[in-house]
Length: 436
Picture: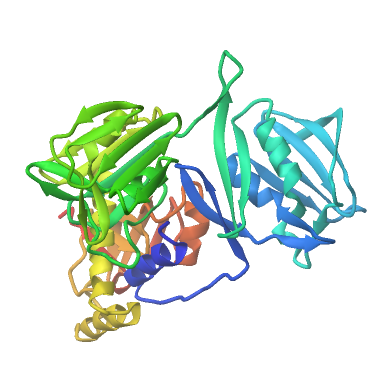
């Protein structure tokens, strides 16, 4: 996962400041093949682990919410999740279900009562929301009346939560829902999803997609993991076994044949080992696992669509932009330049600029004109007016580093008024594109 620290660090380089926040009280959470994040860690009460239900259900359902009622006795939370509402009360095991109206408010008790195996509780900081046993979260996420259903798993080794989305088909069987879009670039160490991404190998940034005889070879294990499957390596036989849903593929290093669900098939290029990583022809594997791929020769980009993932016209542009930005950042890291080093270099150059009281010069010393797009932090805006060294900016664009729906609150971190006109000193912004 591109950790929040990494994403925010890039933003801070752009604003020429640093922050090294570390949150020891967080655990990982993910929907298999779709997105990853963090929530507050669980607390243990009488040997029962209690989890922050509001944060978790909000992660599963972006329209979900938690309203904390502290001015009533006893204190309680109203939790909405996929069209249902639950009143969870501090110190009690009884959970009352309510209906949800078109505004998302909880109305009309349904009469359905659920029981927790351990009384719900708030921590000292009640703003973290109410905590309940994982069994209750698992129950309501698996039995949602109106939305997606999820299997819940707590992974002890990683101290993380994993949810798998599924549906029930006409035969009554459970079918996993795993729409995944992946993007990668030849000779780049990054593997991106729509919401996130990671390095193919955290310890070796030379592990990247490559081409051999016109065929694209990829480090297969991280890709299969993102699709929700598993890879198994047999060193003695030099064999890789891939399992994904009901499909199984067996491939051997330097052998141009494979076995797909028991049927032998030929490969154009044999799998090989590069830097200790098994590299597999991407088209053979993805097509035999029911995925679609797009190859863009000019940009050397590969996009994989799996599980009915929707293809958008802007995918190539967005992913290429992200990877290019991350590549530049990673090269700084690989050259042993810390963020402090990068910022100091920029500040040293900035200190050489000769400003005056009349010209609107940006942070790099360039003249700003009406119509230019200027940036501050992770936001851009259009220059509407100029008055001496001040410029009137309409802030209307947030980069991919900003979570959707959180533009306004994130903009406040940088002192920006989102979707508003604002006078700022020219030297505090940087020209993104010229309209002059």
